[in-house]
Image (tube, rainbow, N blue to C red; front, side, top):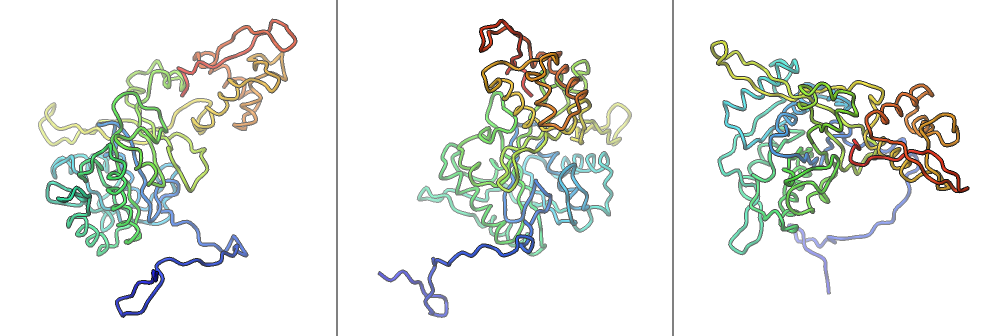
Length: 393
């Protein structure tokens, strides 16, 4: 059987072929990955943002778009050059979009000139279906998706924000094949136009674990198709206690956290990024009757663990749970130097002895780590520590 297919000019070509692989002679000469915001957005890739309804996905996406448009770093995510950002959000009308984006720009100190020529809003006829089920029950790309691709390519858009994914397709959410096809149309589009996509996706009902790729609503195939993913979750009282702000409920109840859930191109040790809901008075009415808009703004946690990722903290907690190589428990007391758990904080976080002492004391005070009696390997009654998993960050 001849598998060769003719080109438009009638010349046969091989759609699949093998080529010998040769190792690169000099790694430093390889082209760098096409990051638009390092660790967050890369050309020809989808970044999934998973979160519950009203958690702040739209506000966060708009804020990211402004930083891209102005060429400003977004927290720890470095933006090397100004990017053209296009935002398609289905949940707000034009007036409400003006209120929210305008309030966010004021709070984050962005001017009209910062965004001019680099921040677009996508208008689309409702329903904004980019992938629909045809008469045969097959999910297909729509004319709207084709027109969207054409418009994005014409304007040289670098990053497209799509919010939310559920409103853009007719796929059955628990059908992995259809969900993969719907996301596949978007991935193929951004690949063809050499852009990145920031895609918001609703989480399932119920409690959500930070950094859980499977927290997204419906089938799990979307998580397998994207290359980067993050979760956006509400701060809990346990986390407030861990951060040392449990006595400030007006603060921690307005905090949300962004955690890495998937990063095919990065090491899995990213820190948690924090944001705070703040209210902006638009002053568009009489005193007491003007509109107030909630916007997400970056927030830096205080305390000894500032800059230490939750992932790395949980790694140390896992080592405490596992115990020492001989089976004994670690100790909270420095008079047992070989068993002192502070050594783990020194080794993993680069803490000094004093920092490790303070960090371990903070864990003990919050109840994250607690003391207990145990029988050691020599049959002696000793004191060690265990982890209260319900209080993990």
